[in-house]
Image 1 (cartoon, rainbow, N blue to C red):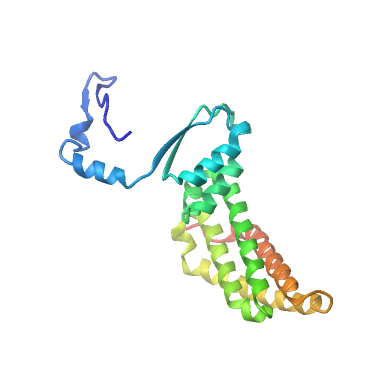
Image 2: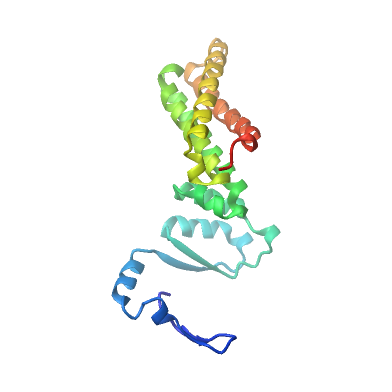
Length: 222
């Protein structure tokens, strides 16, 4: 798969293109194949992705390829399980938001996956603290990270790291912290503390993501 078979061909203008020479593969063949060995490239003959999606996801989890080449998908755009594939990308790749920014078809599913992950982590953070106040710094960090990654899905990592965006994220997290404190005190009177902390933290992160989605169009795009 790293070869240059049929690389010297004649284009429509009748000009023969020597891709070996143009890419300097003839000079740097050793370096090229050394770089290729660092990648895990795998192929999978799916033979119907809708019926064999569980097998595909198990294979991806086992092989963990850098590049996966899928054959015989046998699915039109409407039937392609983009949500499940995006969920696996979010789980496996730290740069999933950047990828989604470049591949619009992944954007919505990636946002959902990011929020799902953040809600689960927020619940765990809230649960392990004896009181919500002890886990609030970690929760605030998780929520700020979520907002930054959601922003990167729409505008790329450069915009997500700009000062106005980061300042807005910090302000939103701070405001949600006060709301979480009030909700925790109210619910703590009738439910176990750890359960309350987990539920309030998860709900707060979900609500923050929803609010950010509504307000995001008003943020600068560049």
